[in-house]
Image 1 (cartoon, rainbow, N blue to C red):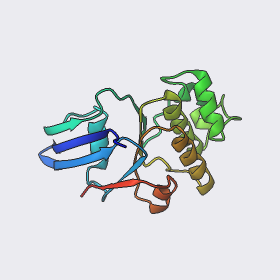
Image 2: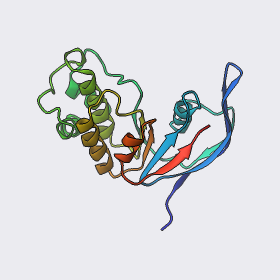
Image 3: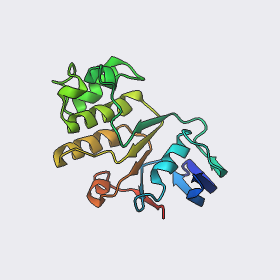
Amino acid sequence: MMHDVISLKNVTKTFGGHAVLNNFSAEIPLCGVTVFRGASGAGKTTLFRLLMGLEKPDSGEICGLEDKKPAVVFQEDRLLPWSTALENAATGSDESRAREALVRLGLGDNLCQLPRELSGGMNRRVAIARALAYGGDVLFLDEPFTGLDEENKKIAADAMREANIPILVITHDDAEADLFGAFCEIRID
């Protein structure tokens, strides 16, 4: 069975004269889970920003995401401090989907709390709920389990897999990658 792919051909991106990605080429399957690995500063987050269209490559070509809507969990939670957990999770979607995602992630009793009233791990789960509630075509996860204990990592990974969309994840942790089950791995050096 043939699946769609994201094709990167000779992609280069520089910042301040420093090439973060230099003639990078890869084919990323648009099915299942793909884990991106590499040393800090190797360009993993930059690659995600390019794939999501937040940055443009200096040269090269990226194909395969033209009609895809990305759902994103950034390295930072990026929550609105004046909005409740439910309002934050509903950003870009609706309260019904947001409520469902928050309950799935164990935050059903915290819907009306502000970010400052929640722990770091709870805020992380609100950020994950927002991405799940959004309903994108591809789920981009940049170090998604920061601040989560082992039980909540498993719950979050299960919820993300159940979204049944392609997952692209950056993680340095083998155990976190294993939470997704079978996956394809792409190295960025």
